[in-house]
Amino acid sequence: QVQLVESGGGLVQAGGSLSVSCAASGLTFSRYVMGWFRQAPGKEREFVAAISWSGASTDYADSAKGRFTISRDNAKNTVYLQMNSLKPEDMAVYYCAAKGGYYRDYADFRRYDYWGQGTQVTVSS
Image (tube, rainbow, N blue to C red; front, side, top):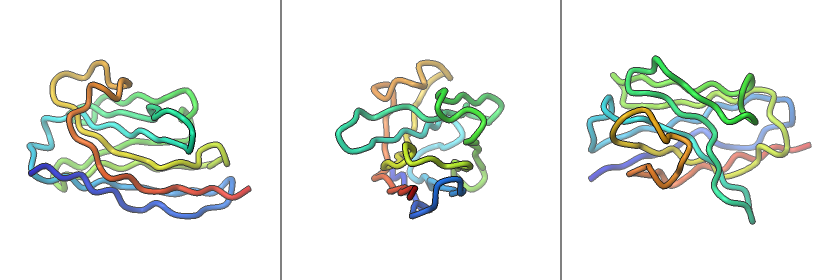
């Protein structure tokens, strides 16, 4: 079956950096758009970043632009999210997700087919 397994979350001070990754199995990874979402307590799940099949196209939420970088390695079936200049408001559970089909509607969490279990990112001020 399809599995998405996130890793790399943890505790970091404000201004610091953290990288999270998501290893996929059970699907043809290179044919899926990959996205990162996050959810803080009491808030809705929100889009963070997305990357197209080949990695040629990437998109970010305004809150992530200039600070976060999404990338993928199709040979390793893994997608990454490098987060720099972290702020307390970035604290959340971060989820990776896989979306079949074309690179569109990638910010809509309802369009994604598979989800990881999430990894906690805690930013101390």
